[in-house]
Amino acid sequence: MPPLVGAELIQTPVQLYRYLLRCCRLLPTTAMQQHYRHAIRQSFNSHSDEDDPGRLRMIIQRAIADADWIIDKVRMKIIFIMKLKQIHTIML
Image 1 (spheres, one colour):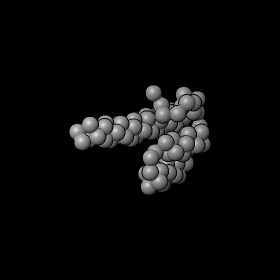
Image 2 (cartoon, one colour):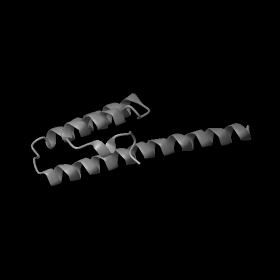
Image 3 (spheres, helix red, strand yellow):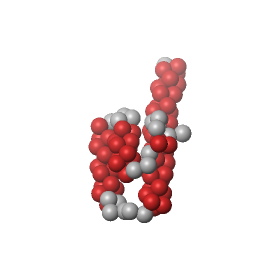
Image 4 (cartoon, one colour):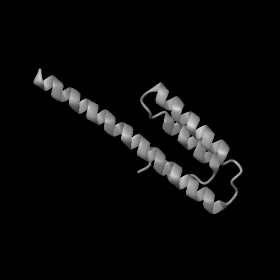
């Protein structure tokens, strides 16, 4: 499941760019947000001359899948930390 609603509607590189920047807002720290915003900008600039529709569709699908993976990874880490805190509190 994509991190934000509307991922299935993305058809252009600009829509993808805006979607990925919105995904960055879900990241917990400013440093992470800045890192991924920079990576998104770099990828957008490096693929700006791409005009093959099949290749663009593949890039869009992969970018959405990568964003989903990153957001899930961060969520799982937060859940793990919260559970550790609960266990620590119970033991005290």
